[in-house]
Amino acid sequence: MLRDRWGTQTGSPSLYSPERSSAPATQPQTRTSNGLDQFFGSIRDQSNLSILDFAGASQANVSFITTLGHRIFSNDILHTLDEAFGGEGDFVANQGDRHRADFFLRESLDFPERSFDGALVWDTLQFLAPPLLQETVDRLYQILRPQSALLAFFHAEEKANQVPLYNYRIVESKTLSLTPRGQRKPAQYFNNRSLEKLFQKFHSVKFFLTRDHLREVIVRR
Amino acid sequence: MWNKRKEEEYPPKQASVPPAAANQAKENTPMSTAPAISHHSPETRGPAVIGKSVMIKGQIFSREDLTIDGEVDGAVELQEHRLTVGPHGKLQAGVKAREIVVLGTIHGNVEASDKIDIRKDAKLVGDIKTARIVIEDGAYFKGSIDIARPEIGKPAPAPQKQQTSAPASVANAAAASAPSSPSEVKR
Image (cartoon, rainbow over all chains, first blue to last red; front, side, top):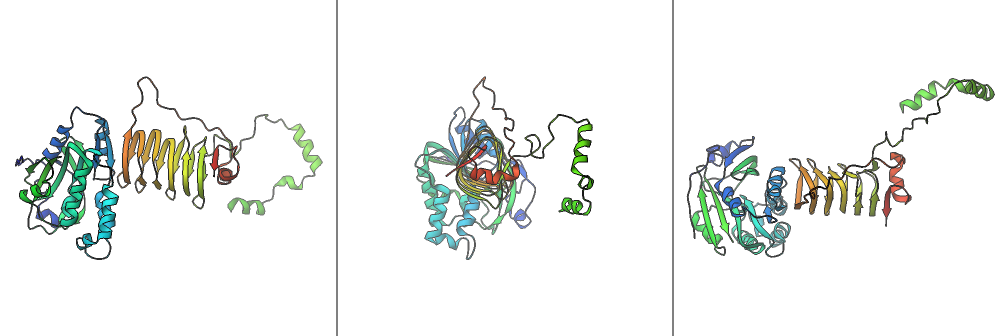
């Protein structure tokens, strides 16, 4: 396992801090992302790749990825999460409902094996409760091709009750624009050890711990 | 409504003139031989429209621009023309056109030889193949996007002029009943 820790955040210093969680910002903010830089570095000089993007419909992401000569598959997974587990009852408890969980997996990850050369998962995994989380990661493993990269973000503040949700827009290979879209309680807290365990099937896991309490994780299939 | 009332209140003066005298007056008056401007001439009317209360099951082929604000279950093919799916439009269909503007909902694969424009509040679930794409913030899209790069030396397809004089107001009926009209429905 390869593990790095960088304090690299150069945008707003507290995008993910608890203070900001209590008074969420409404304006888009930009931040530097070493994880994103590593992700695009891994597919540099290649074309006609298939990239899975969980950020939903976005002109910025579509333009950036297709300009590199790749095909993008776009899905707003937070929207699918709300469809599957929202409504009556507790959002996290509802994830134990097999019928709802199957709907979520079918709507978000129903692809043939080895369909993608990269996945931009953003911060969505931290809202999944353990049994469904492992199923989702296993499914991601199946639909990714060997050597492909997966980028995921995890809130690193253990005591945070709510974390801000964002629309992630790619400005350039190392820069993201984050548009706030509310807050949500994470299903669990992740440290490096629990992330290594979560992605144990994968070839390697690389961490970038940023000053704004965010773990950027690059996982190699 | 307004025009009707005015006509009732102020009947045209010619009505009181005897027909023979009216014809004589016409013969002495110099007239232009240019055709009268019709409200439904191709230059003045908009694209054919499938209204929001119309539901079609089958295939639509069109040789002119088309706006769909109703429901279509089947296939829509405009090849060299522009398709607009209005805010009430719901398509459960494969779609092919030169340009596609989505304000409503499409479930199906979409192919545009020139451009796809997915507006705010639109919903598109399906795979897209196009040369250019515009996605407004607030649009919902789920599917893959393949950008077809135009071949070098081959110009992008140009929009064609309207070819028909069928009035837009009867386009709904024409789409369902007249196979010779530019918008054609096959069941």
